[in-house]
Image (cartoon, rainbow, N blue to C red):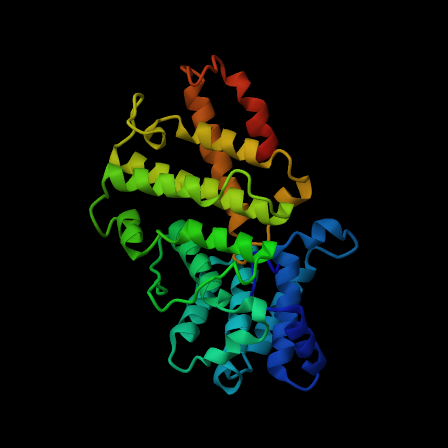
Length: 335
């Protein structure tokens, strides 16, 4: 979880474990963390001896403990961590309304003036990452559920300095941040229809940004690279959806992202980018909001829709029939 959910360092977690019998906040955090692991990381698929309902039972226990806590009597960072873990658990259990409540709570705590700036420094490698983790989670949820966002990138936002910390976890997280940078309130206003549809040039620029945010030769552990690639291709699909709604698609487009068959290109790119990755890395995504599982499902649906629609007339980059692409798509989507 250090790479894509840098919210709790192992040393800090162990300190809470040591205090859980005497501190209600520590007890709630530890139980919520265990529930998060079972509902979010694919841990159960690797440990068949654990009953599938254990994650839900732990979430119920964490929620019961949370109801007896005053979040303002503990360090604000602890309250943010508990709320974020509960958010991820509810996403994993399919409880969208409860998940959104706790997501809003995390961002409200963060933006409150009472936030203790030193609380983010419980480990040097976590410096500044909390803001970006919340920003990514909020924007991914906002795109998926058409919700507003509260966190904005400003000149005073924390920096992610991979020069000082060149470890793969920080590097992978920085690229994940880069993917979501342009998806701000203005984009979401276009996305939800609050503002008129954006221009073709804007969508083309966003598509180009997504293409360039993750270098093709990026060397990262499989689990981090899988998370990045799935998020990248899912966001490309969202741009294509917006272009579809605006009526910008064409069989002779000015840019590939405006092609009717663009989801096929996305599916192929995902296949080529992940075919060397382990199967477990594609099955076990550590995104804090459970987004990767839903992103894969949406990519699956869009890709297969276009395969069905495009089977009638596919003359694309030398591929004369749909069978040339089907093995790649089936392997990635598991169909």
